[in-house]
Length: 102
Image (tube, rainbow, N blue to C red):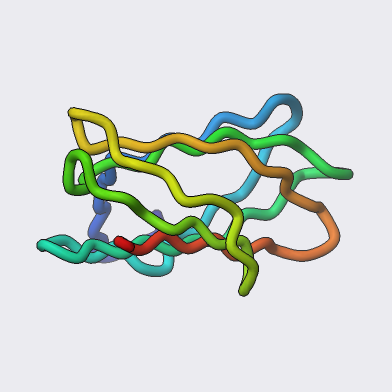
């Protein structure tokens, strides 16, 4: 964390790589009636399948998941406000994911 005053924000966001490791950087996390999420993922090597579980969503609402500018899926948040999906991350460049309420 370094020296001085630091702030650590926790999120209902879980990332599980199938092998190896990934670096994840959350870039957007808004709350409210139209929550949005965005993050980048960079694999330690090669191409790694990664499962994401994203929370703090409106239960029962549909969300569009994007990988870069392409729509990856449209998913419905479960009764606890979570949704899950799996995608591959590369080691050559960071992959940007975003999630927005439909």
